Image 1 (cartoon, helix red, strand yellow):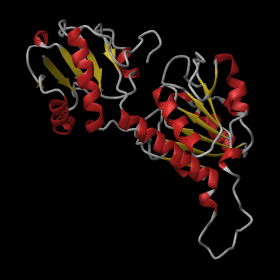
Image 2 (tube, one colour; image 1 turned 180 degrees about the horizontal axis):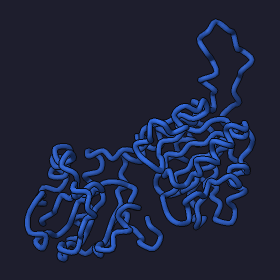
Image 3 (cartoon, one colour; image 1 turned 180 degrees about the vertical axis):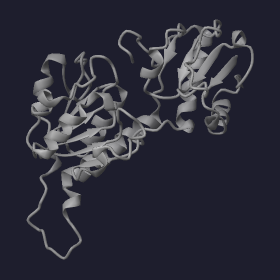
Length: 306
């Protein structure tokens, strides 16, 4: 099979060895007649001229395999008619679960309260994890991985998704129960995708539903959060702290108030990176499925946007 690598040039050296090792029967190319390719490996930022990708010349392609989990910048491309699959791989899920667990534990234990200034603060004893309810917004593969990690530490976890689809060993609430999901969350984790339904979902009204002093982690999508509403909730003491990994504009501009706010921690979109070693086998499996006419992994629903 011939596969076109439609990704920024800087990714070639990192990805091509892993992809070829995972799928040795593939001829991976960076140039050639578009009509000759059976599939594309794609990442936003291609072409590097800044123009939108034109998928129409790749009329023979049976698959566009994204290297990233987020596909909101791809599904809006009207020239894309080929099946599109997002990347969900074991390394990505593990990385997201570790990021969420690490920051949840740091906030839960109040690690930053123990300043090394000679003061003996032995009255600041945290509750047990079993006494700190967590709600996860978004119960896809990443949400399930995060839930399992947090439950392993003893946190009571509630999941929320628009569908309310059941998840084994997790209490999951559906669309109409969002207020209930928020009201019980001393730690709220948003793993929601960027869709018309999720944009500004966490606005002033919904942030006010959280228990006073609640913590917010957002490694999902920056558009889910109303930035001004979050800053107001923090300034008023209604929320305790926010750890944000994703933003409406990235990189986050140096002058953005998130950088200087004492109750905001910024991480630079590193919660769940796609690692070639674990992602390449997923891409290889989808390429083989596409060639054999079999069901594809993580096929994107264009209407839902993910």
